[in-house]
Image (cartoon, rainbow, N blue to C red; front, side):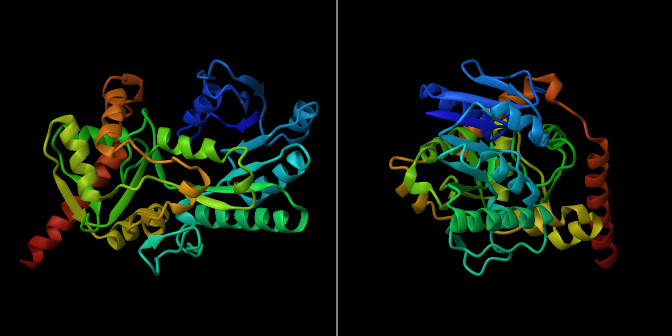
Length: 334
């Protein structure tokens, strides 16, 4: 198959690219070439997808079996891609987000028929609007789209956590130094973390799959962990006991409104995914990498890569301030 991946070197897309190449497919990567890690075996098309005229000229002599865009966020992005790729591909894959699912949930188990509604996060509402456009284009004109909804996906370079500022390293550093870390709520809500290698297995299985045309599907692990368990697993992998400091989500959002989307619109809610649909569409799909294994790979990279160890003193101070404020309030009432 001839594949065009727009992006192709990010957290979710890198392993998709690798698996496509391993399958022996003809893989084109369209990106600006900022990253140096363009995989061997792919054909690099250098360009900015937002420069529509240039991209149209670049792909003019090409047709694809599958086009997958990993960097689409707004309805304007979707309209541009419909103009670019109508009659140029047999399948167009849009990467949406599981954060688009109803918040708060009316049922704890999420299927693809769970309503899409997120009043807390503009990012998620934009993804919903993108989906609406694609569904309308499919129904009216037969645009061969497939919608994929990832949840919290991580790779061998990225340690997943619930609450951080500009650098995950600051959280890992606090854990390593046995300092308290903020955990939203009481840490008992369940979360699903999916390794990018598992995600790629399901994603690649949808590519060129005629049964996936017109469908929306999420791809996640079946492993559910509380946030307390997530941080404990990370700390034990480092070799320390975690010092978890629980703070009400509403208080965190009131103090730092930018957390409304990532917390109230996503991570503060229990998410348990029913993956029956991806397993029907891609027989044999199974997320096999448990978090306890995958996060050790991520930590190995982070702890041994000085360039990835970016301090965030502002978030470090924010953490200390929140803890001090809550302890002062507790002392005043005791």
